[in-house]
Length: 339
Image (cartoon, rainbow, N blue to C red; front, side, top):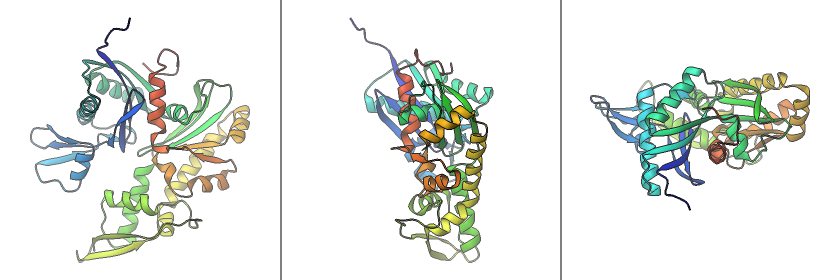
């Protein structure tokens, strides 16, 4: 006989750019990691998509906050409010009410003890009774469908919003890993800076994100190039409106420096890989996950540069979230989960 349980199980991919919550193998929350707060009372006004719509348009009494920076909690209070709000939204969508939660949360592989503690505290304050954590590259591997417990090496490059996680996985553990604070947010910042310097036009983070999504490229020559993306913004000197077409070649040039740093980090991780596992990686290829994996031509550029085949996960943005969901069903089996 099965008794009704007051404890619900959820998996959370707590990302710098987006937060994803999975319940019963379904993604029920996939929204930007941002909150809008009342400046005077610090009370929550909006979360996720609603808060993102306010970003850059706030009146004096409202401030928008992104609680995570470089993959870790930078504003503890805002993070707790955000997690609570998303869990409340998730419960309303799924029509359940749980006084306590069993959860698995994805965290960057380079997290310090203090940062891990901050995530755990935020989760516990949001009604988390049993809180497990999983390193994001391991979660990405599970989400891609790799047998992480097999006695062979697999390399994952997870390019998120705040960090790029590079890890070699074998026998249910991370053999070597590298976490660098060069990722999607830096590529967006490169575009903001380029538009200011090259075109004397001021664009916000959201517009730069749109440029990256529409014409972002790691190569200056693509087989199926996207059409130029037209940007509207004020001239920095005169404040008069400007209309500028931006090509993928232009964006490739402006993101070159940051992408080169990711390349260097991958090469550095390969240098530290034991020979037997290196041979496995050459045979299996390297997997790209995270939002950065969607940049046009990135897999080809890395394959040509490093000489090992790079594969893009089927749904790179959801790889970590899906893997966190797999871990949630196997908390008693997987020894690599952090309590």
